[in-house]
Image (cartoon, rainbow, N blue to C red; front, side, top):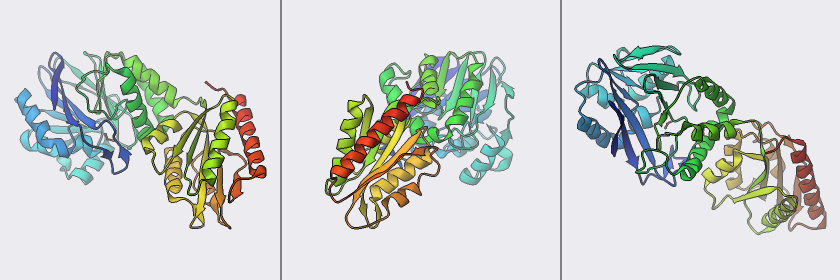
Length: 394
Ligand code: FEO
């Protein structure tokens, strides 16, 4: 756990989860994570912004006690997901007068998830302010930073924006600020890809909304703070932009090598044309790496052998996930192999309904790829090259 005074009467409490390796039983955490909260002591009112995951509740409460605020008047819940709200009931047990400030939707979710009595809530409207005496909080509704109730909190006098998941990164680090920007960039991109990419168009609006604010620091509730806000804001602007990069990603599985032979052949042909190619052998890949690659790529080529009359289950999982994440890719297709018959194309085509892509001609080989399939792969590479050329690429 880290406590740091980031400005006069403003404290950062960060519960480090160094060894956590999976979030939501889904998201790999190669760098662990942290759950940040912030204590703001105004001349009249004291506020806690967010709390900590219940697995770190004892450390969090001990740190709060170490700072020793005589009272907490409000707990601001920017997000109802329990990794930030889960320790709020314990805070309310200790500070009986405290009210939970959140959106109407946040109140509904926390009532259901944490069983907090409704009378403990004070809901706020978009743009509403709250005076702490010498400091003022402004609440900014920002629904769908992957949940429907999310909001940001802006501390006007100190120009600090508290964004919870938004702009955050799953890293456990002793750095208070994002001094190692290269490392934080990768972790923040991974995090954006895994939970926010589906809401890319909404995130664009959130970025526009906060552009009006003067911001000295950004305080997310995962990972280090940003004392150079342009670093993370510019990164997000790139990720959510409508522009794709000249990249093809190929998530694939291969049982006896036929599909992999096709993947390697297609990769060679694409690379000869100056296209960046990122293959992911799904039985060994970190699914977060695949999600990150989906942030930028213009084309996705799903490659699979036929097993149990359809795609390999690892390909089914990755395709389901890619469809759910709704990347901005413009083109997709399927390549692969089969032994006698099967419905590879039909299965995969039926799983990508959320992708707004033009589907290019698939290539299937019976057994090993032969001259005909290599010709088709040549044509596919040429088709991808031409499509990418037609787009405004970066
Ligand atoms: Fe970090 Fe959506 O919770």
